[in-house]
Image (tube, rainbow, N blue to C red; front, side, top):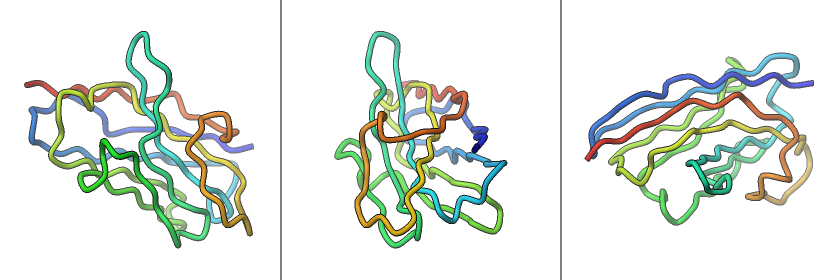
Length: 127
């Protein structure tokens, strides 16, 4: 069982930056693919970014590519999402997610592929 706790959300002006953290307990993240998703009221949870279990590969949605960076620190058992050049449309609740991925060479952008979720952290970008 993996427990995930997100932090780092808040209110920021357009063009600003935030760094989200996702601290894990219960299992080491070294064998887990990690993802970030976001959701706004009335919409489905949307893929933002993922990093493979071995940290060899990262993937981003087109809407955040070039502005967001996902990283994983296995020693700290924590995943990060660095968000730069934020836009009002980045507003939402951001969720961290994990799936067992060791030796799997694929990457996953569907929320149904992830088994473990955090409680979410609110990000609000004002114009």
